[in-house]
Image 1: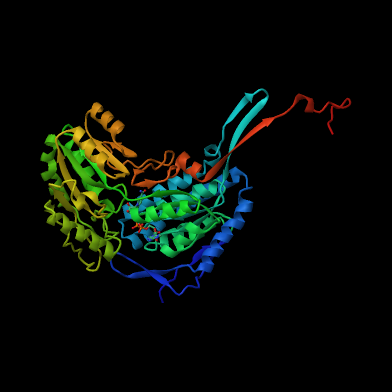
Image 2: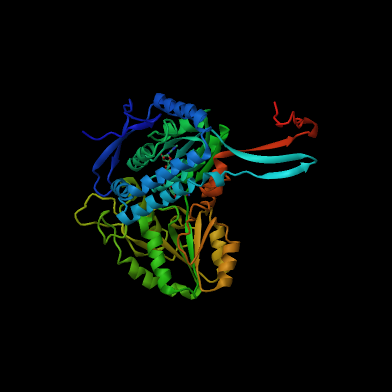
Length: 497
Ligand code: NAD
């Protein structure tokens, strides 16, 4: 009998009463690993109600106790790091090294959540008027919801619930139905760390369950990470229902290569940042912009692309794993075909890729296009596969114009030996996360994850100070005390009644 994943409601892992079960498959083999329930309306209601009830007591728990829960959680996550990564590899197909990175980047956010006291500190000003002082506090919102994508099933849930809960909220997480085993394991460890019932609920399902969260009056804030169309739907629906929302969406990230850059660093960074995780990263580099003579390095790039291959999660020679699903693979293949038809030159075509011993995996080989222009679909659309498009331009200004014309603004990088070129690029580029000789510039959790334009809808970004602002409301208190109100000392022992 196939294992069925439970829901987490009010501190209990419960079997769903649903009659709709979603198979979770190993994308390297198509083996069904388990089934996830599409939570029923009643179960959704119970999950939100549990969060609402728990909020009443949790918001009164001293901040240092909330921080200690995160310290215990962080320690447990570290203890179980490899075990979580193995579950993650099974359901995503990620190589073990990559899966460990996914878990580790999440642990770092849980670690940061343990600093919640200093992150929540307000401000004070004395004598804003004669004898009047003002101070501000940050207070939690209530029940917050998180909706997460398939591509980082540990890191992205951990971007959300530890910080929200440390700030005094309670949380309902709706992870991707494609890899829900990892989030369930994260939730088990959170309970083991001593989380009170109702702090975290995990519900499973798809659009219907998401829409319940977006429209329910007891959900106060929604964090979403996923594709552009769904991100737009989530942002519009959540804000239409008067909730605050932060929605992180798709991307098309450019790396600009100046002719004075270090060729070896450029080539190896391009291979890793475009094909790593089978290109299924929102910060993957999917467009290489060669400025001037740097285009001479494309041959070397093609020969290094040809040397890597996908493979099983525990194959140390594999550069990356499969696409998450047969449908995702078909979409990538369709985009490759379209690129050829649009007139781009396919220097290396990964469409017909097999991996020995794993005939049913969703494999796509490394794919490299040159002669790509900005009007082509392979340039404009997020492919989310191991496909790199090379564009050649004559100047840094031209490169900047190209990048700034993109509707996306998640990440970008420039490789150069020139401080002036790097300074100009970082200053003028309209992208929220910029790397200088760093291909994938994901900020650590004391900063925030700051996508722009079509890659983000909202104003406060994920984790760091902005994450805490997102999950809290600011209250200002202005007070005045009159001298005449000071109680007069009574008797020799100065006691005051
Ligand atoms: P997705 O949009 O298909 O799914 C994301 C979540 O939304 C899942 O939990 C899913 O169940 C739910 N969902 C799907 N369709 C829905 C609908 N019609 N209505 C309501 N909810 C729905 O995304 P995905 O394929 O899981 O993830 C890949 C995408 O996520 C890529 O576009 C990638 O760029 C993006 N992503 C962005 C960031 C970022 O920080 N900007 C990070 C990671 C991934």
